[in-house]
Image (tube, rainbow, N blue to C red; front, side):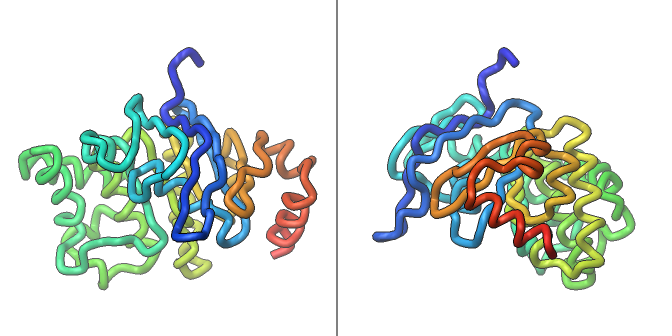
Length: 247
């Protein structure tokens, strides 16, 4: 690829008080690439992708997203968030708004889109995530899997170029996980740039261009899925995969 990476992190350091959450992390994500990040709890996975969306700010190193440098106090943070969608574990929908209102509030308030245009886009993406009939319901009336698909549609309504997923299935009942993963697989196949923190290794094998294993705030291993799963280089990665693939 000749384009510059859409995400470029160089030696990122992040502290929470005395806790060193990210220790000199460097990674590039190319346009259209699907990167899956895994690792034990507390390894820095979620912190890293939250830095990509300026929900957290690094204290050392350099970070560029969509060609703009990201740092605390940067003037372009709101513009950045228009291009980088985030899907969280807990859906983060507004409970007092209908599904349609949840999808249209961002485009109207942030991007100045008319209500009619925002609603047309919202209905298109509700169709896209296969719940067009839920538009007038409130989040509490939906299953967890449906709520997470609404959250994905909400990001798509902002015309995002990069989608970040922070363990998007971890709060779901087992039977709801597949319906969310199916939507994510389709997005990946359509060429969406994706960075996904997940323990869903079947999904990772299917869609990832690159696997990243983190532990204790560092990237320990990066490889294509076949190499990563079949020939992990580090003892820490082998141990993690042995445990997670047994379940």
